Length: 312
Image (tube, rainbow, N blue to C red; front, side, top):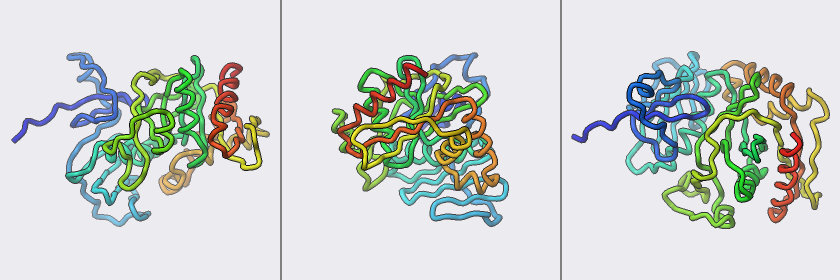
């Protein structure tokens, strides 16, 4: 029998995450005997058999069950089973043949989102980029162009703080780093000159890949200067930036961009998500960026975001 692998610590969303085996797409914390390993971890990740509770769930969908205690089970047909409990423990069971990229996709996508809601710290559905020392969140619905815009900004010399989901603390405005990887559709990755590797496919049968960005990653928390909500508009030939008309509208915009609102409604009727959006909207400016649907206009979109960063 092989010797068990030592636990490895990581920093993710500002939390110390301790995993019972190495994780391929996270950056491990340096080993610090006597200093690091004895510190408690805010989140424990254990690879073990996942068992269902004996009571009936209060909510069930195709892949997710939520129980009265707040415990969540996530089951994926790829052969991934994740138990999320108390906002601090992830138990993971994977079948042979599941790739590191597939595991990363579900563990640090939906499962991490659910854990954030258990901790009553809703994540924003956004990429955050460090633009010359200013953190700008690029939010939007699926297909709005968040990742493409963020990757274009990185191509211009800026750094990624987090991809797809962002943990932001309203009182301090601090946004915490995610991991040094982003997800891109195959055609976008190729356009940026990235190597498309089948082993980095996020999901079987889907032309989307994990792209490592180690040299362009910002590993330190930063105060958030502004949130830009992307809105594709086929009638436009050039992007247009506008402030939210009022604080009330800013709250509504942020609330709609909370990742996993359905989970939030089951866990506490969405109260934490609304309070989070309300607190952040009163501390950070929210802008609407209407953009042309033509992907060739991505540089003009990023010109506007860079201009906002310079004046934020």
